[in-house]
Image (cartoon, rainbow over all chains, first blue to last red; front, side, top):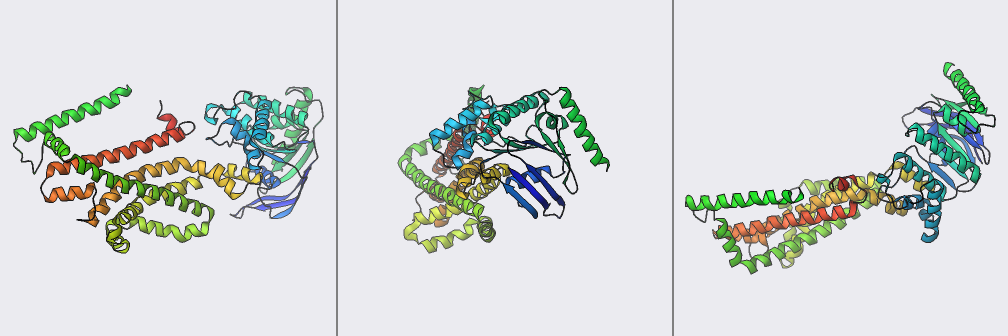
Length: 238
Length: 260
């Protein structure tokens, strides 16, 4: 679905942000990109989305719509939830009637039916993030890229949104690349975890997680956390 | 509570006017130094038609200049936001135009435009005065758009025009309106200054009425014209504040805070 090969990137100030980053995400796969703050995982995601050009390396991406969710909801404060969710469709010139229908459906799928006319300032942090998710889904993407989307939320809200994301992934057969710094989140949500280390950012471990992680506290999930933490400790110690 | 906000300043005004009236009478202050409020009211009634004509003249110059400044300022800011080169090239000249005292440029403009097009000259002078806050506000606003939102529009293959229309212009609106509030007052100041410079026989507005009344020692009429100018300034500000509230009340923090 998407593959990065030997990606390198320097920031304008000369800092080497990424060195030789290579990984691939297969269609229908849910992959987490896990690492400490400042390890370049957001940069890698932006490069994967095509928002940033790498200095070295190659990206191959299947054609089709991409959905992108930022760490902040990144909504238009002057527009209501429906208009916000409709933005990708408006930009693509989808007729207003269809666009409204798709956007309303996307809002309903993230649990925001009835909030179409609400402005961002009237919504809670979690609800704003749901609008952001609905906007990413409105254009019916095959590939969903998420940049620490739940990092700014409280744990209860974060878990609820995580559950929803997992459900949407299953229902739609989405391909997901999920940037996070949470071992717990990655262990529960994803099928595979890529561990990234900083200065320069590079992928140092690729862990396939066992199935049967249906609950956050299922033995398999706990075991996955142990595995990810071990890999993380190893690279930090090194 | 809300009515107190209106009643209290009005009570103060009444008290001050009463004190003024009493002082002038008690101290026998001659009317060519300080006329009593009653004398000013009398002068206002006496010259009502001509004062209203003068007000209309000044207001039309002000509003035309304000409209021109809003359009030119916004258009320039949009051009600057699309071309960094043009911004670097032209912005310094906008600043020079802003910092050069308009009184110093006014005679030139009057000569170039010609005294047979006096109204156009007045509008141009007032436009120069009002232009800069609009340009500065709109430029800042267009640059303040959320980078991530801009990235998002790029992700969906939006054209520059789409990004401008859907993201940059709405972001700039509060900044533009703030610039417009400043520019509204400046347009009036510009119109008055222009009339002063244009001088006798040509200008027909309130500023000219003030100069003329001063020369004739008709201080009561001067005060009446002055009061009308102040009223015009306050009305322009109030109208723009209302416009700002109407456009921003649904989403912008500034308008939401002022509602409570």
